[in-house]
Length: 224
Ligand code: SF4
Image (tube, rainbow, N blue to C red):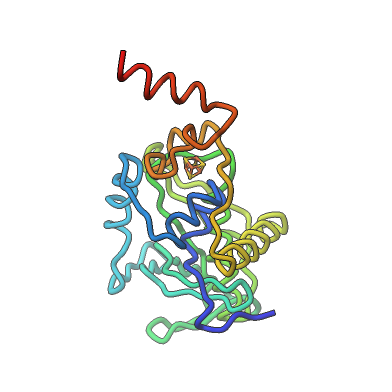
């Protein structure tokens, strides 16, 4: 199955979907967004990476910023932070660039404000970018990297079959939910504490099993 241009969803949403499907739906279906400290830090990091006219030669590599990518198989489109071009003498899985002679292997790099996370939402976003580049150029990409500002370190990521399957599953579920227009149920957990939409979602208020706790905390304590 391939998606038409009209059905494409934002690739960057896949990290929100992986973090919490409800958060993704609140942002992309209900157009809700609230900045918290973590999202503000993320925006600052990306201001340095997002410059579509930027090209830099770093040693033998070329660094391109804000590269448009899309996959009709996944139904995702977006803009990568950085795509590095690494020189190669192999014909296979390499591309040409109009400004730079020779053959180049694309190597996507995503910039994040925090540090590596347990549920691999950053890796899934990076793999989705790699899969878009693969579809656009008819190549196979083995590796990309995530630069984490908090630890000031670049982590190389293998674009494994497992990551690819997760990307495909997330993309198909995102399309299913988007078509339905319905918000996924609350999945309350530790991640809610880091959620920029906690005040809108109010996970405690609609969790019946914790309703008495919510009332005690938010109603009785206020009137005491
Ligand atoms: S508060 Fe929790 S359940 Fe609600 S959107 Fe955020 S992470 Fe998801």
